[in-house]
Length: 241
Image (cartoon, rainbow, N blue to C red; front, side, top):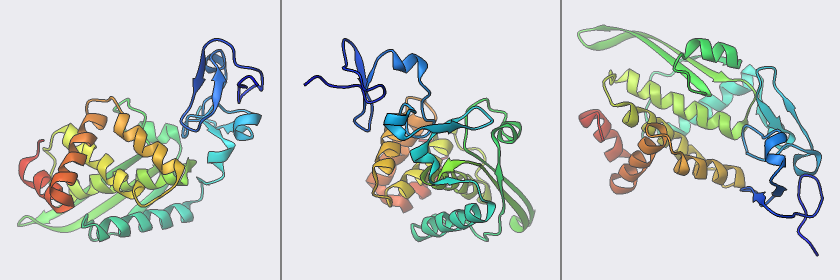
């Protein structure tokens, strides 16, 4: 029996593509069918039960949309859960009284002008007296509509940025900073034993970006060699890999 395309149901002939989830597609579909921004599946009735397009241009399949975080209260709850889990690992962000905002893609782009597609943004303003923090304002912005697992990783990434800011570490290399923030996200993913978590861990490990991907792999090696305390100590003392 011939192998069938999971998108159109027709026999596969010639070149075809197989995704992380085991779906096989005719090569032509890759040029025309929408791809889920969060799981990489082709969005179709046979593959994902359909999907939807957000007003900001993102495409999300029905499978991922089931857990999409669009409620401010629920988003704040998840942020608190991620914060508490990172604290259990020794990544302390204190005091923790954030102003939290779910925002759309256009607002996120206006906040972060790096030109890179991101899922969150953090602002830490502080006042010090004799090098002691006496007053601070913490704001965390997360992109609305993320599937819950990506929402958790976005929270972890931004909380790690706050960890840097709250310690006055503003001169660390971009690779150490962003790689370490991705490492915090990876630690959260390790608690989640699902195929979706495996997909995201694989994506982090295979990210070819020199700063975000390369930095993450170096941070991961530090954690594997020295543990979380050794990794955090290296950040505080070296500022570079």
